[in-house]
Image (cartoon, rainbow, N blue to C red):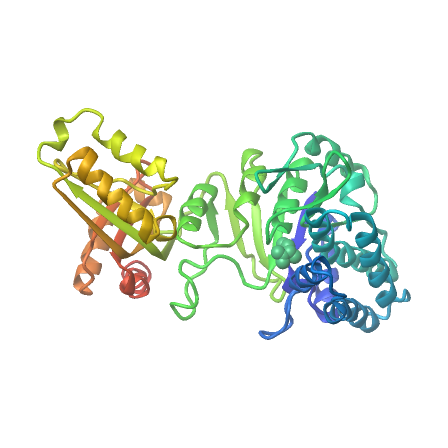
Length: 449
Ligand code: ASP
């Protein structure tokens, strides 16, 4: 069985929905279809979820939110009309929004969750209606009834373990299951949504629950590219990538799947296939636990800005027991997470995301390092970016770091630091922020041209 999730752009219009249905019906193993809310039809369009968030804010501030509400209802009504569906979709969506306000209006958090979920919920109902109108045996399934049990913890929505067993029952349904993404319900039956982009997570949970042979994630690109297409024209695509490589690349801003969508499928060894709704003949990218083919030594190159480099030195630092621990406890006192900590003999560098160390905190850290730890020199560089090369094949290949460093030096990019993780599947170069994109392009030339 296959679980296939369609993103907002795949469900943005009647035409897109027709494509989705063609894809679903082409392979009868596609048993569960997970729907997002209709996304943008063009650049200046507004996603239904964004309209719902504005609507929730308006209602919570005591306004009617008539404009947002009208836009949401018309959006569904327009799609339904083009698909020649019988139901009055404008009234259906409007009544659905009223019902949510009646049920949840007393609590601002609950109401926001419930209204945000309406986009996926109505979209899944509409999709099921259309499949039925085509004469197909398809049914809408309510996540709260099916057992998508969630809980809120420190502002984050997490899945309860027992959801997997409950949702496994969906294997038994004979019809095509159309399941709204992005939400479930807590133990008291209140609607809970995941963070933005969370339909990916719903799909991953369902794929894990029914032990799907593959979790297809349909979007509007052919898959993962070795480098962001905004930096290099027509970059090469990645046929296969491991979960570990994905995680490394996601660190530097490579976003393909929602981060929380990785673990449900990874833990159960279910491959994910990123596919393009607008180009279904492309095989897309497979995310797997173990790779059998390597097209190149480097799988992906990514860059990210917004890092701060704290460099400290102290004579005979290496002999001082507990020095690094005391540095880190100063950071911990100020709730500053750190990213990397390469060290020399008498020096230590700490890489921190700049937004985690605003100027006030920086001043306190520097002061405490000098006064409490007697550090000789502290320098702070707030304009650091990182570029990363990632690939499991790198671990078995000699000289990849040297090749990358040479390419960067040839291009005149000064390296502020180099970090190679113990796993040897990635190397991170710290460069001046202004050089990040240029450095990524130079590395692409080196490894792919
Ligand atoms: N519709 C939600 C969002 O825009 C969830 C999703 O599309 O995955 O974030």
